Image (cartoon, rainbow, N blue to C red; front, side, top):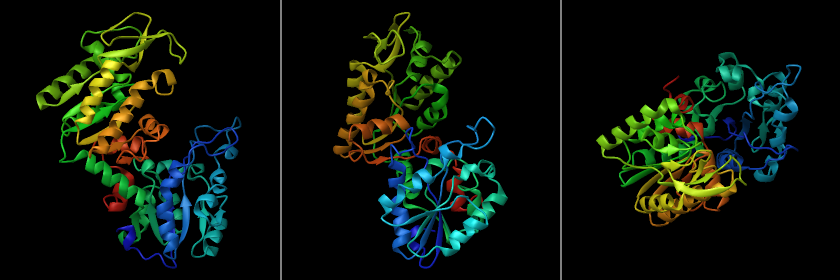
Amino acid sequence: MNIKDIDFKGKKALIRVDFNVPLDADFNITDDTRIQAALPTIRHILDNGGSAILMSHLGRPLKKLNADGTINTRKFTLRHVAGYLPNVLNCIVKFADHTTGEETEQYVAALKAGEVLLLENTRFHKGEKKGDEAFAKELSKLGDIYINDAFGTAHRAHASTTTVANYFAPENRAFGFLMENEIKNATRALHSEDRPITAITGGAKVSDKLLLLESLLDRVNNLIIGGGMAYTFAKAQGGKIGNSLCEEDKLDLALDLLKKAKAKGVNIYLPTDNKIADTFANDANSKFAATNNIPDGWMGLDIGPESIDTFKKVILDSKTILWNGPMGVFEFENFATGTKSIAEAVAASTAQGAFSLVGGGDSVAAVKQMGLGDKVSFVSTGGGAMLEFLEGKELPGIAAIQGAMA
């Protein structure tokens, strides 16, 4: 069922959102991107005569308990978000101290059209991460319609993201606008007919991206590999990488991936030069060196100017671009040039008519920091979820709405 085809008038919509937002030491929201992304769905329901019951997780409260073994409700409560929502929704937002139970059900019963109720952190309940049927059934009592708009958690088979959908008939469950856009754009990037298709991957470890890399070989024309994982490839090919990050047990896998790429006619682009440092710190001594000839005691923390030029040319010649992962230690300003240069190239290629999808924490952060968020085709809100989608896996949160898990 499409959200636009549902009649929300007089109905209560139970909406799974992703309000797992970063907070500072005083519990102020430092980045409201995920909240902003959910607003179109919430407003659509309110504007069409419905009321909204919002549920989300915040952090990992059961993994970071107080010293006495109790949940740190002060740190992980969604009250921090409840106080912020009226500013962006322009309406009164009520808050339920519990996710389910008699008191919460009373809040829901009193909810009128156009009103919003935010439930307490779903992960305060042990049944959430287990996909518990009893907990999911209690949640389902709160709404007439279930909407999943939390793409960032779609790869988790949790009670509020997956199991709860089974208690709603197909005509009473749907994706929110954010989920629809995430699925549509990721599918477009993966199955585009607009070639050349270039995938840019970065990050620390080959093991983290191995399934993605292998999956991409069947879809792309060019594969750019940067970040820490590039040094595993360099060493596998006989290069000298100094103290650079390397997965010694993945050298054979790296060589095997290169062979597969060659057999499939996929062009692999690895860094040829790097900005290296004598210690892992922003203020470390630094210089440039060939990727296959990094001195002992030095480590590669970013791609160099030669590699940047090569990668940019490939990107500017592409018609479809998928970017997941940084080119270096992006959190260090002195080693962020490579990642920022890639962001500029992706934006420039998009301006020439290419379709670009950016997904993954640091690559998304780079685009946003540089004010290029509206200069690329789509910026994904999902880290792990987007990665698994691109690997070709079935995501539980998607399958539950589509009925595959009902």
